Every structure is written in structure tokens, then in C-alpha cells.
Length: 68
Image (cartoon, helix red, strand yellow):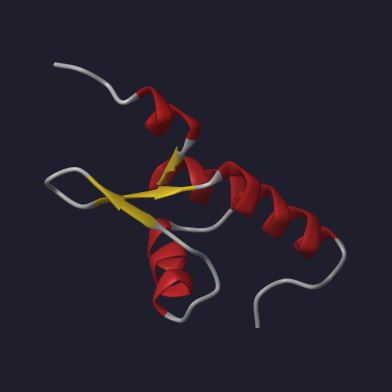
């Protein structure tokens, strides 16, 4: 079994939700309405999130500019 080294730079849905302090359901909802971009990977089409995007969401939330 090989692991794509580039994929290691992305967060799983559990990691991203934990970092943002929201549930996985909320993160999926935000993806559906376009507030966050998820990349689908592998045969199961698992979601992965760019750490830079999650960090930006955290910065925006700390300034009071979170999702509507």
C-alpha cells in the first residue's frame, strides 16, 4: 500500500472539524453551500481540506467574520 505524499498535506474531515470546533455534519453543510472547499480523494471519495483554507477560516472567525 502506498501513500500519496502530497495528500499528507491535507486534513481529514475529522481533523478540519476539530480545528474549527464544529461537527463533521456542519463542515459538510458548509461545503454544500460553498463556504469551504473539500477535495475528494480515493475510491471512497473521502473529503480532504487544505490546511491553509482552514487556517484562514480560523483567522476570519477570530475577527468576527465567520460563515453566515
